[in-house]
Length: 131
Length: 122
View 1 (tube, rainbow over the protein chains, first blue to last red):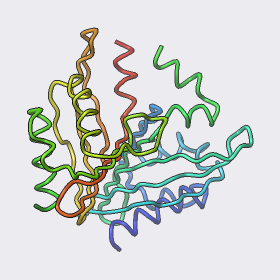
View 2: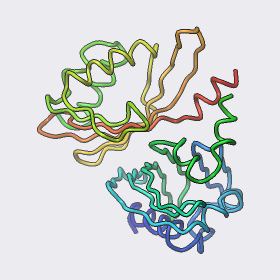
View 3: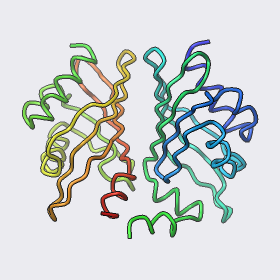
């Protein structure tokens, strides 16, 4: 399988399968980084820290995707229903490294992290980091 | 010039704050200067003005990672910011490029806001 096929399998697990099958596609030493101080240093750590996010009903709309050998980049929008019941969309990009059919690392960037924090109900926690 | 060469010229020039604009297309589209607004800023001159302002905020920069696939590229760039109050910090920016007709034609940037959290915690 090509790296982008592995990445799309991973994104499908995250966005369509509530995280079912993550342990089978993540490298044991999976390294994850996003704007909300969720830094995970193993697959088990990531699965534990992102359990709530996996359960949020959401869809992904892929805009651009490309790869250079085992390094990939995806630009996409995520649509979801916020805890207050409104529909919202956020643009993200991620940088994923694949090795031997496993996801080794991922860095996620939100176009507007504050808007995401506000919509998902943790704006106060997010802003506290800036005070 | 191919995508990699264009980016090398751009980033080398950006680091020296000189001649980076030679590889920017006249119809350049830039998204990301304002995190709350995804409407593109249009035109080379408008981007030059943005970078002239941004250039006063960083001292040096370096490319940490680069993925090139034909006319598209992802760059993780790291900037050494020095703010007017004297505080300094190093922060990443994810930069997505598109090349058209031998020039850099589009850029979308995503700031790593964790860097700024660390600054404010200083």
